[in-house]
Length: 289
Length: 172
Ligand SMILES: Cc1cc2nc3c(=O)[nH]c(=O)nc-3n(C[C@@H](O)[C@@H](O)[C@H](O)COP(=O)(O)OP(=O)(O)OC[C@H]3O[C@@H](n4cnc5c(N)ncnc54)[C@H](O)[C@@H]3O)c2cc1C
Ligand code: FES
Ligand code: FES
Image (cartoon, rainbow over all chains, first blue to last red; front, side):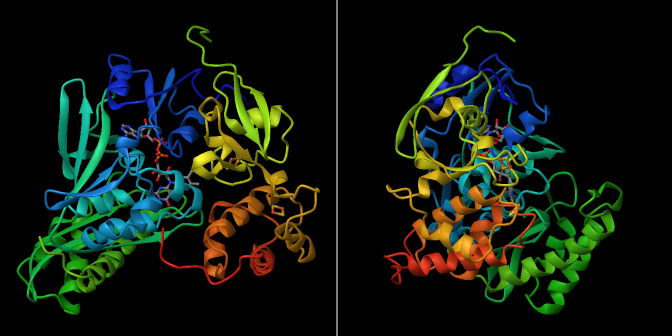
């Protein structure tokens, strides 16, 4: 039962120290809260030689306002984000997403950084960050990279981070209404989650971003839904048409299917959560940019 | 197994107020190390972070699952297990009494973890609603009781605790 984790364990005290430890060593893995990684190590899905614990690096924690947006440090936990008035006021969908994390300890120990690096279809933050147009900031041997959420979530079990990079923060731009909704499976994870961000002017939708997690193996935007909304007024009829368009955005051939929910069930959830996320975003307070 | 650069082979911790040196094997979790040292109230229910039977209250982190924590990360930390609920004279905590009185434990396997979740909640919220209690137990799996008596027991314990006044709401 012992020896399930790598033999070597290092506590890093600074970002530079992490980068040094990662440099040229693909067998070193970062651990933050450990709530995603440790189960994977125990299952033998990953078998690194060394863990670098970043949880003591306070510079990676916290929420602040920056350049007309909200900046959230990689180590900030779901509960902190959910409880933050700044996030609730400026990036509501993310507050709602982090608040939905269905397991008490995972909510209090799990970090936004770990959540976005793994970006499992069951996770809550990815759809919200994608819909909100977030930017993920990483540091590596060649300095800083700012990666759009769209490029970040790039494939099944894959995000745009390199093994020698550290996610330091995410940045969410201001200026929209937004909302998030998900279903829970028995263990508290999401089956399907949808987040919507609406840029409005008076009663008109100027632009919309809608994202879903749990349909495909990684979070995606729903372009036909977004087109249906853009330029129109926000009413029940429009929201229903937009939600119908989701059925054309998701290729039935690539739907996630497992013991929790098959593809058809997920597709039904995508449509109905699309509508609900749009309702939430419609009634959420507008944020001035 | 390579022995080079092996991490420390023991850590100092303070378990329920008693200083202790815990042997750790390389690559071991806190749960495993605690159990080898005889702290058997820390249960290994699932060994993968799902059931909450291995809950401890750990230093600044607070309530966590010891099966997900590298033992090597705990040097210098305070650890509370369910035994830490007893008072100095070894008397049961109101939570434990209510669990007994209300039949909130059946096989008992989940109980140390559930009690620590309940205790952690009462530290934050002295007048918890039923919903808040259910939320606090969302990380605990109990296969016997159906949770109803556990929720009632936690609520009853909250009423008995000295500072169960309406707490100032809103600060997080
Ligand atoms: C019982 C249970 C229930 C859960 N329920 C939910 C739920 O309802 N919703 C949900 O969204 N999630 C849920 N989770 C998943 C939870 O683990 C994540 O939400 C959490 O945010 C992961 O963060 P962490 O800090 O624990 O990551 P870790 O486990 O520490 O790390 C995960 C991965 O990310 C990498 N990593 C971490 N931080 C960084 C960084 N800053 N830079 C580069 N790489 C990094 C690590 O190397 C590792 O590969 C649950 C987990 C458990 C065990
Ligand atoms: S044994 Fe740790 S959560 Fe189940
Ligand atoms: S009392 Fe048996 S698992 Fe809870």
